[in-house]
Length: 166
Image (cartoon, rainbow, N blue to C red; front, top):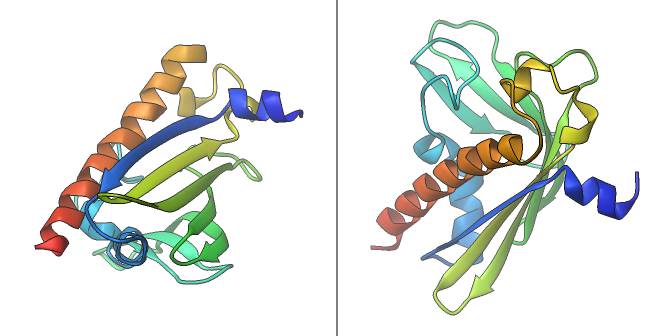
């Protein structure tokens, strides 16, 4: 797949948070459960009570941990862990088959007012148009849905960052 083709199946979303990159990275990873929204749009199970957690370092996992002691769901595996600049992880959903995954890159860049947090979520072209992850959407409509998903999460990250910067 060429660079142009790979970028066509990527969703780009960013926000500026009011803290420095080191704290933004810490909030994104160590405090993921404080800003990753609840509900069926954002969590894998039907349970309302779960916690999101990153395991630090390359090979660490993004887990959804359930209060009923059920086996945690592995949403992702960390492929790049470079605080305070970059985090990358493979991400999958409950309806993904064996070997199906997407790739999420998160960049933390200093700005005059804090840190630009940019999310690039790639790998959607590998999923058929009727794959459950698409919810019946393709092309721009699917990209917009995923942009709103990450946009909602980044708004919540900004809210958490503001509470930490006071």
